[in-house]
Length: 506
Image 1: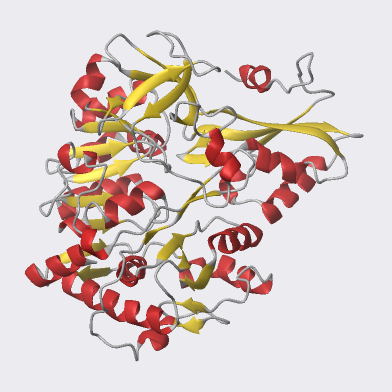
Image 2 (image 1 turned 120 degrees about the vertical axis):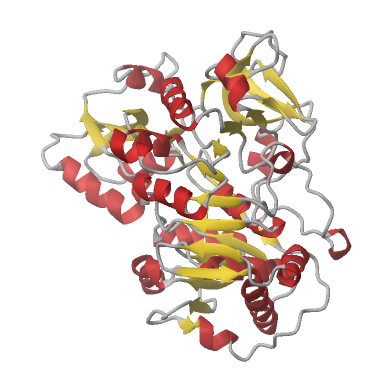
């Protein structure tokens, strides 16, 4: 990638990324050299521009090395969640058309299960670091690749997946960028104009790199801009404060669950770190309770920005800390020239204060990979796009979320759809009906709750359902609580009334 090469030449010894939890760092010069060699190796596998690979890794330097290599080789790369199950991996690899898989020893259990259950589809599989049984050695594979840069190719990019209402992930595959346009500015420059991203920044990433926001902010908005990333292996509130002080962190990004855990620290721990370097803290992924954000503002000062968006990039709203303090609860106003509309079910614009579907107009169109029906459902007759959320705007155009995607559960910043969980639970022969809803949770915002109508008695059924979910669902998707009942609330037309179930716990 041209921007990385530029910084490698200008500041070869500057650290591009620290991984303090595993005691490793990588400089711009070393990252550039490794990306070049890996790109040459990927091309030697016969991969052509537009082909793709998949990555299943915990947070480690090779994640960045492979990502930048794919960008140089004109390839798509799909970061996979480490919480997936082999059947979920198999679906995503097949849907994305991945031609190779690269894993790390930190996800050995899932990586081993993938081979055992044939989830990789027989494509070449490699393991970084010390390697894994059944996987070819990544280091041995790239050892013979040349150090020389590739001839110009289109710029590769990430190929991310977003959960869908049917439970099947939806791929968002955007066009590659032509080589001659590689230095053209992004359509969305909010991160630079509002947050001040640049070479002087040090960005703390407390989340998994396979998530869309951490991935984008670390690779495209920090390293590619000459800044330094500090990557946590996993979030720990005390450790996060320690790293802000140690590395003089200037920028960071969080989800509300992390704020809750930070605020739960003893006052003595919260006060003993020097956080004066910290000037921009960004949060998104889930609505933040007003009281939680107010307490964070009182502690960190007015440095907390919030945005509302989705992986589909149909539109973004942003609110500064100063504007939020005037209008607590808002998620901002639209940026990048996009207009915001609140619409009824027929696509008519609603007046300020009325609740309706949140729609954006003016952003580049997107398409879900291999899902034209889902793409069509995201747009109305006037070409306005929606993430399916409900909200209202005030007289000045500030957006307030009223509800989330119809049945979506947001737990700890993770999007969870009930339909996928219900499809697993109903497989059990003793389950007649089931409904899954999100109920309040003090730390995670919501937890997954299953309401089950058993065919006979419920003795032993919860344990059986737990076992079934462990086999077929990623950890965050598994129910944390159960309720057994004689019937589910339904409308006269037979439609399940999830609202009634959720209201019991509000």
